[in-house]
Length: 250
Image (cartoon, rainbow, N blue to C red):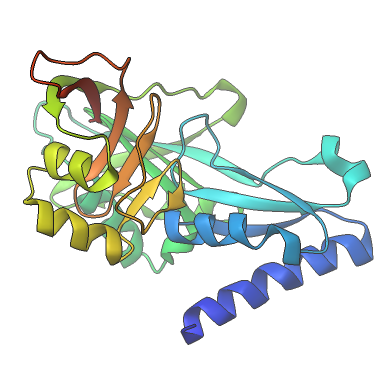
């Protein structure tokens, strides 16, 4: 176990111990998919209950809340939504996730203070720890060469439905390596390496077994390739291959 994993597990254990001992709700910062997978696997090692939220229903990066069982109805995540918009749409550049993240990091923010960054041209919304939302709205005035304005959106009024590109395909098997090779346009060996190196997540759980069988509704997050939702009803071709659909989160 590497030092970073040891530190992460100790931090999560300490937060859960503090929640139970002081009878309060404690929170992590935003966790990435690998960290979410780890905390789900270490649930029996924790001292308190916990649950995850990223500020909206489809969030990938999420914050863990630790709480005594009788406080389960008192969990209010310290998450804000900040909207970023160009001052002039006519002269605005087309900004992507990397542009926005880079601008925020240049302001001195750490990645764990920021949740999902949702690009909805020409605007974008970033989920962030509440303690930095005021700093963001005050300090972020330009992204690349585009002057922008930032304002906070009440989280209760924020909703987001992901957009998809839908495709149909055929595979010989719904094994994870076979599906990844298909949706990511990789060779089978490259797909197997992606899985064995821990870069594949199914429903936010890190899966390192190529033989995992994908099911209808599974959400695959493949590091460096994107996020996909699998849809299958078991339909077969005449040659015995499996028909299925997949949605690419765009």
